[in-house]
Structure formats: C-alpha cells, structure tokens
Amino acid sequence: MSVVVTYMEVRHLCPAKELSMKLSTRLTIVAAVAAIALAPPAFAALKVGTQAPDFTAPAYLAGQPFTFNLTAALKKGPVVVYFFPAPHTSGCNIEAHLFSQAIDQFKALHATVIGVSAGHLSQLAAFSKEADHCSGKFPVAADKGAKIAKAYDATLFFRPGWSNRTSYVIAPSGKIAFVYSSLSPTKHVQETLDAVKALEKSQAARPRTASKQP
Image (cartoon, helix red, strand yellow):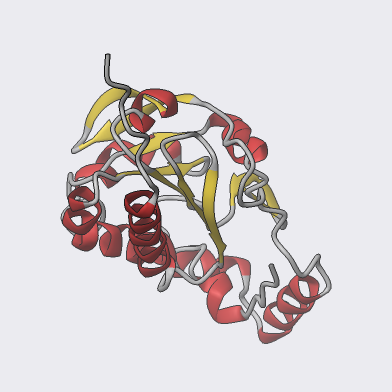
C-alpha cells in the first residue's frame, strides 16, 4: 500500500499557527518534506482477512463520556474504525465533518463508525459535539499512548505517539474487510462507505443454510 506524502498533506496534521511556528522558514519546510520523502513509503496497516484486535477505550459522543468496546459494537453490524492524528487539526477537522455528513448512510447499512486518536486527548469531548466536526453524530475514542494504533499498525511514522490516518472496515465476524491509508482526509469516507456496501452485498449473496425439518 504505497503512500505519497506531500507538504500539503503534512499541513493537515497541524493548525496553521502551530505549523507556522514549526516551519518558520522555507528552508525548514523543504527539510521537513525531504525528511518525510526519505521515510518508509508505505503504511504498515494490517492486512485484509486478519482478525481485528479487540479493544475497549474511553470515548465521547456529543460530548458525553462512555466506554466503547469493539466486540459489543460488532454484534450490531460492521464497524468502521478510523484512526486520525489529533482533533482540531485541519485534516482531522475535514475528515470528521465528512463522516458526520455521511453517517446516516452508514447507519442504513447497520454500520458503526468510531474515530480513534492519540493526540490532543483533552480536546476530544469538545470535538465530538462541535457542529463543524463530529456534530454529535458518531463517537471518538481516546487512545492514550497510541496503544490501539500500535495494535493496528497505524502509528504516524514521523510522530510515533500519534496515530496516522488509516481507516478499517471490520466485518461482524471480527475480520478486517477493508483498509485505506492516506494522510489526505478527503477519500476516507467514500472509500469506507463503498467497502461497507460491498460487504453488505457479499453477505446478502451468501447462500443460507436450509433448516432441517424434524
């Protein structure tokens, strides 16, 4: 799974003020992009067909805390687990807003959406309810120490304490049905929605075992 990382995508990871402080000169910007270009060219995401690691994590929905458990969510249908670096960074704001706009389509397919982040954890509660972001329509979970991200091979290679931007679709069986990695936030929603639709179609096409007559 090749990933091309550009400066524009790096901008999605930092607020404008933070980015300007970190990359204050053109030379620094060039050096940062060059360093990323020399980094491993692929995200080491888990492969389709492998068993998704179970996890339980503190989470927020519309600002209210609760405990999210993957196994419990899978009993209701497929689960979209999307890792993102940190709330209130430009790319993550866009991605959350796009998921909130599409959430009814996921629900129509009996799919649960959960965002997972290891960055700026004190801001997750607000992020989960803000109209421009999650809008209270789906939960986000706190991944302290990026432990869940590490289990899913979804850590950010140039900031290991944060997760990268990787989205998984997990079938009710607990198997990974689809994975998509890109620092750009624009395609994650459509990619995972299409994957959930394909999963629904494949399950509907499976022949049902006839019940035995007494």
